[in-house]
Length: 349
Image (tube, one colour):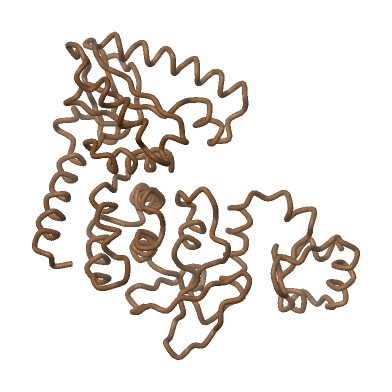
């Protein structure tokens, strides 16, 4: 059994043979219950596999797909997960792969889903000797097929990683202009902002957009009149005098914080909120579940948007430490959104 534990998890018959082991090892381990059958002809050590979170299992399956499938490329949400970008709440039931040639006839099985799509050489890169989709292709593929909040989280994560640029996304959007579902990416591209730090911030931004709220600026440093840092909220609506923050307990538990760490952060949250209100700002809070629908975020925002007092805060961009009005990223985003608005209006898509 120890020899099987050293194989990649999950593993196939080819991995067993490459390790100079007998397939009988697998048969005996399955019969004894020490191995579980993950999928048809795919196995894993039960003690290891069954304690893994669902998305960890999906990433491990994706790594197996990369290793075992030579005529298709991991793509869509599976590739995003392999890159460590934000992912939907629940993983796909199967690893998504794009066939490398129209002549291929691979059929979907219990753990792999094969799709066909034009894949020019420019959309493929070689990493660790294995062909992979370029980041912009993965972002647009996800934007076309996933729920918009998840597509936005992946776009934000890709931009945050520095592996993709707005120009890359625009070029890929133009390439896919006639592809099924591509118009679903329009609002995602309009909202994409690499300054958001996690899935919850991106999902909240999508929920706010869905209810017609203005786009909040993420991760702005709020300073008092003397230049002392009061806090950095998840979102800022400067014109309305409102800051927004996801509710602490569930947010921090999602991040994997311990109970003691959660309490410490909640205490910090309370101090930060008091600091915001002392500066004349209104504070809107929401729980992660509110980011699914968004109506609570919108109603709370509307309830306070016209109640802010005389705001005495200074707003500094966290990405460049300059006043928000002088932030190069904000200026670039304004130009980006104007460009998209003009092109959408011309119906060139």
